[in-house]
Image 1 (cartoon, chains in turn purple, red):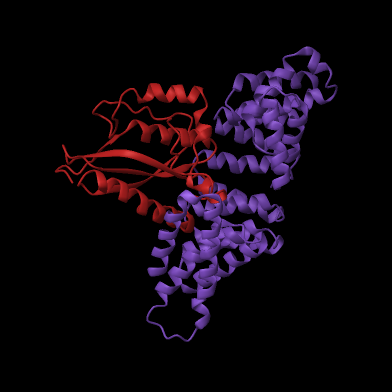
Image 2: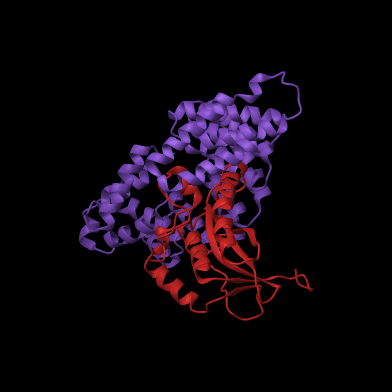
Length: 303
Length: 157
């Protein structure tokens, strides 16, 4: 995951590169370091370096890393011929290399030849059963073939071994959500919150899932996690503020007719604080939408 | 609805283009949005889609953001539409996969989804080559930054 500062630096470099201001090599290194997916730009500018023999030789040993990066970017943009060429160069330089073998298997996968790719990955895994990247490719292939339950199976096996891989937990949660298996998604977010309790993203996602499952207890819990998100983001999370309003309205609806035993359920101050904060934000940044927001909040309070 | 139960949908150029540009903007994810239209005054078996509103490109199946977007949409859109004609507006949620092969929608009577203006595809390829999709913002973007307008008012100027 990328921090806001890192993202800003990346976007600035990207603008510079796209407008002919140079800094291509720094940009490519930053993309590699942050592991972000900017394949079109990487392909365009990476290729321009590789196709220029002067620039290429000035890279020294980094030339091969660039070939690898461009090959992967090319596959992401479905420029398979470019990818094939890069891989050929690498094969010539490093015959029998496992790292190049991975790229070859990736190319087979990019062509959509699932069975051959499966075989290629299995062979690679025999030599190195703990290779995380290859395990993840198997998940990706299952997803690409439209077999989410297979992807879930692979991911669960992966997580038994690599249980600290947060990205994998997130991916699993998102697949569960797409299949409407909300309880299982909730479990994933619980694991994430346990391991990284100061990341507001997980609290927010967990709250969204709890709200989606529904039921009074879950709504009350969701509201707590929205509140936690607001705490962790210093009140800046629009989604969490809206979440509080939605929860308040839904809880009020569900607990209508019950005895007022639990005054905590209502928490009217929380809802009105959230509404005020939202209106302030819209007034400052998006005054055109303020009326829309106010009428939306009104309809939530009434229902 | 009509006698044979199968509705045909006629989609306006702007609605169609917005839809395609939205999915191009987020090539690696599925996107969803709302199509807004009304039952045609001329033919009850046809729904005229006058506009599309791009909603999300992540976590499509979660309730809270979806509910908020539909509440906000409800208030604004139905207001605008009911001022026009007397027919009651129809809203439909449409989920599209951002696959590379976009289904080519033509004006032939065979497909269920028809393009109202056949020149739409030409305008679309123009926009694609000028990378217009970068200007499309959806409700997801709005939730991250409230200054972004998910109705994309200036998109076709």
